[in-house]
Amino acid sequence: MPPEEKTGVTCADLFDKCYRYKIPQNVRDLGIYPYFHPVQSAPGDEVVIDGRECIMVGSNNYLGLVNHPKVKEAAAEAARKYGSGCTGSRFLNGTLDLHLELEHRLAKFMKREAALVFSTGFQTNLGTISSLVGKGDALFIDRQVHACIVDGARLSYGKVYRFAHNNMDDFERVVNNVINNNNHRGGLMVVVDGVFSMEGDIVDLPRLVEVAQRYGIRVMVDDAHSVGVLGETGAGTAEHFGLIDKVDITMGTFSKSFASLGGFIVAEAAVIEWVKHTARALIFSASIPPANAASVLACLDIIESEPERRENLWKNARRMRRELADLGFDVGRTETPIVPIVIGDDLEAFVFWKALFDRGVFTNPVVSPAVPPGRAMIRTSYTATHTDEQLDRVVEIVAEVGREKGLIS
Image 1 (tube, helix red, strand yellow):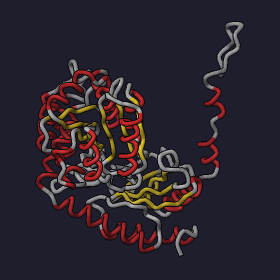
Image 2 (cartoon, one colour; image 1 turned 135 degrees about the horizontal axis):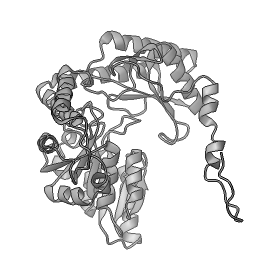
Image 3 (cartoon, helix red, strand yellow; image 1 turned 120 degrees about the vertical axis):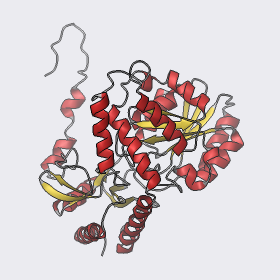
Image 4 (spheres, one colour; image 1 turned 120 degrees about the horizontal axis):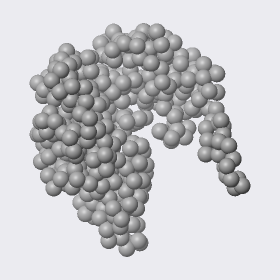
C-alpha cells in the first residue's frame, strides 16, 4: 500500500516499480517459472524437487563431496565442539582456530604465501576489489565476468574499463587507450574469471599475463569454478597453465568443489594483511560458522588424497560435451564440466527447462543479463559422482526434448 501524503510536495513512490513488476508472475501463469523450486532431499546427483525425483545436472557439486560421510561428520563434530555460529566478525570475536587452520591449509594447497577467508564468495570479490582499487586507479574486467566482480568494481573508487569476452587483443587495446590517451598514472589491475560460470570456457591466462606484465598490471583471477577442477592438484587456472607465480591474487569459493559456504583469496602476505584490515565486506560481516570451516578442511583432505575424483569429473565432462555437441546442440566454447545448451530466446529457454524437468532432469535456465541477449541457455554441469546410467538418461531426455522443440534434427 502506498504511503500517505504527508507534505504538499508530490514525489514518486519508491515502490511503484515493485507494483508494476509482473514478469515473474507472467511466467508463472505460463507454467514455466524455473526459479526458487525447493529441494526436498539431500543435495546430490539425484534429488527430489517439488515432489519429483530428478537427476541433478544443475549444481556446482563438482567433486561430489556435499554428501561425503567424512565431510558431514566433520561439520557435525565442529558444531558439537564450537556451537552453531561465531556471533561476530573475523575482525573482532569471530575468528576461531579453525579459521586460521583453514587459511594455512588453503595457502599451502594453492601454493601461495597467505590466505584470507570471507563469509561468502560474493563478499570475497566485493571486499577484495573495493579495498585494493582506489581513487586514481584503473580496473579492467572481461565483459562476461561474474556479477560479484562487477559489483566489486562499482564499490571501488577506481575507473572501470571492460574488454571483449576472453579477447586479449581487445584487452591490450583498452589498456593502450587508458595509458596513452588518458595519461593514466595510477595503479592498474585486471580481474577475470578462471572458468566463466555460464559458458564454461577457460580464460586465456597466458596471453592475459603477457599483456599484464608488459604494462605493470596486477592480475586477479576468480577461480570459483576452477579450484578443485583445474590443475594437476586442483589448485585452479594458474596451476593449469603453469602460471602460479604470475597471478597476484586468486579467489575461490567453498560452495562448489568444497561443498560448504564461504570464500577466500590467496596472495602474498603483504596483500592479505592490507585486505584483512581494509575490506569492509570482511570487517563488517559475521564469520563463517565452524561447521562450514570444518567441512572445507575435510574436503581438502579428500581432494589431496583422492585425485581419482577429479579424473572421473573430467571423464564425465568430456563425455557430455562430446555427446551433446554430436547431437547437434550449440554448446558454445566450453572446455569444462559446465556444458551450456544455447537456446536463444528467453521464454524458449524456460519452455525447454520445463520439458526437461517434467521428464526428471533438473538444469538451470540462464537468460540476459547473465548471458548476452539472444544467447539464453540451459546450463548443465557435471560431477565426479554421476554414474554412466544417470548420464545415459540425461542424454536421452535432452535429445528427446531437443527434437520436440526443433533445436536438433
